[in-house]
Length: 260
Image 1 (cartoon, rainbow, N blue to C red):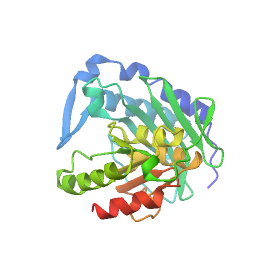
Image 2 (tube, one colour; image 1 turned 90 degrees about the vertical axis):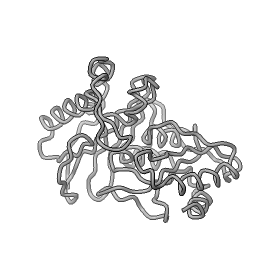
Image 3 (tube, rainbow, N blue to C red; image 1 turned 120 degrees about the vertical axis):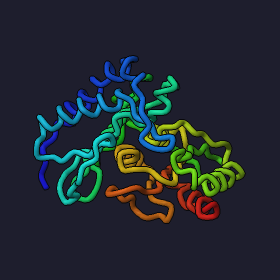
C-alpha cells in the first residue's frame, strides 16, 4: 500500500513529548497494570498526544499503543507506539527511558524512531536508508565471538515463571562473553546494539511496541534480529527477541536454547 508520511514531522512530534515526560505531577500518578507492570500519567499523556497528532495528520493509518490496545488489521499500515519504554526506570528516576514509535506496512517495519529525553539522543531509521543517531549514520560492531562481546539482557520482570530459564541463559552468556548489561528499556538496548555500544541483546518475552522501532534500527545498522528459533519477529503479538551484530547471532541462539 502506498503511504506518504513526513518522517521528519513525525520525529518532531516525538521530541515535543519532553515536557510531558518531565511533568513530576503526572509521574507521581502511578497505577499497576499487572505484576511489576506499571503505568503513569506520563505514559498516558505521551500516548494521547502522539495518537491525536498522528490521527489528525494520517487518519488512514491505524494506531496501536501500549496504553490503549486496539484490534489491528495488519494487512494495512499501522503505527506502533510505546509511549514510555522503561516505565519502572522512570518511576525511580533512573533516567533511562524512551519514547518509541514505528510504522508497520507491507509486512514489516518501514520506519522506527527511539527518543531518550534524558540524554537527548534520537535513534531513527527508514527501511533501506540506513540507521542514524541524530544526523550521524551508525553501524553495529565487528565482534566475531561472544568472547569479544558485551551482551544486553532483559529480565521480563512481570513473568516470574521465566526466572529460571532467563537466569540459566544469562549465566551461559556471562560464562562466554566479556560481561552482560541490564538497562530496563528494550528499545534502548536494541539501539545500543545498532550504535555499537553492545554486541547483542536478548529478552525472552516482549510486546510489539517494545521492539518494533528498535528492530528496524538494528537491521538498518547492519545487524540481525530474530526470535530464539532464528525466525523473523511476529508483530502481531509477543515474541522473544535476539538482536546482534549478525556475526555472533548463531552463537547467541545456541546459548539461549541451552538455557530454555
